[in-house]
Image 1 (cartoon, rainbow, N blue to C red):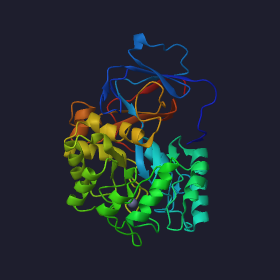
Image 2: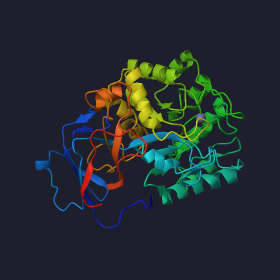
Image 3: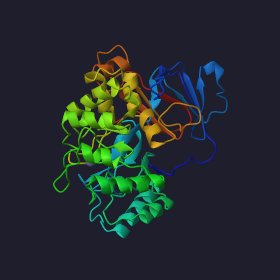
Image 4: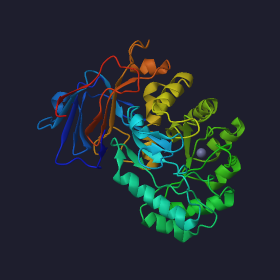
Amino acid sequence: MAHDAPQATGPSKLVIRNIGLLLSGALERPILDADTIVAENGRITAIGRFKDVNTEGATTVVDAHGTTVAPGLIDSHVHPVAGDWTPRQNQINWIDSYLHGGVTTMISAGEVHMPGRPRDVVGLKAMAIFAQRAFWTLRPGGVKVHAGAPVIECEMVEDDFKELAAAGVKLLGEVGLGGVKDGPTARKMVGWARKYGIQSTIHTGGPSIPGSGLIDKDVVLEADTDVVGHINGGHTALPDDQIRCICEGCKRGLELVHNGNERSALFTLRIAREMGDLNRVILGTDAPAGSGVQPLGILRMVSMLSSLGDLPAELAFCLATGNTARMRELDCGIIEVGRSADFVLMDKAQHSPGKNILESVQLGDLPGIGMTIIDGIVRTQRSRNTPPAGKVPEIVIGH
Ligand SMILES: [Zn+2]
């Protein structure tokens, strides 16, 4: 296992050929008619038929052997702490395990599990800047962890947000986990954050653990964060009528998490679809947490929403890729020229009853992952965590 630096050394050219099904991650066109992807120096440079694209000079060639290629999955809601260790359940290598579940990018919703987490303004700013730096420098298994998400406290002033932004902080931790729990204060600080280019999210629903509190629809709508964090609760969800009010009362991101209420997630999905707002729905795990760590959590959400929510699987994958990338302004998440070459290669799990991967996911099964690629570099081959797939890709040139 490698703790890779952000970039590969030297020029590189990756070719993935014999792709059986290409999922784009974009809702408006979820399936692409192509069997080959070319990526140079970590960015996608061509997508098309093998005979039509320039594959010469490849440093790595992957034969997909008819498997499905999708953008690497994005977990919109994690709570990282220090490298690949979480004190919440005292586990190591949890991020590497997520990579084996197809997750190539993670967004911190606050480093709240840091033992002795400082709550004074100087201390919380220092910790946010430290976390942003630390996870930028160290990528467990190559996974891109966007961290450094301070939990706001009532004593903060506008200059604190300006200073955080200037230091490279781009996210707020969940509003409500700190001392700010009322609508007017939250709205004021979220506004300051937005003014300096810092994205925000909020803890929606009942308390997650002893010590945290209720955030109801009035606070969520007044705070007006960019993302309505775990609208299906973390763990306790708001009543359905309040979830409906939030969906209809704003145009912000609607985040569904694994560690929430699954029935409320399906309810939110239905409302978003009725409103024609499926593009607002994004997925996370909200792990590590009391419910533990779920290496397959994003795949499980895709499968759960597709099967129980009657959502075509190719669209369900968009909720975990392109939707999140667009909302979070990431350069990955969609198979498109110019974007980051972050992929997951998978196939229908052995013995799943569906006739292909999409049908098997719609029947509620998980796919088997055969390979992950980040920045055009193969990071893992056959997953140690998913069920084994029928077909697996193979590296035919390179390593
Ligand atoms: Zn939360």
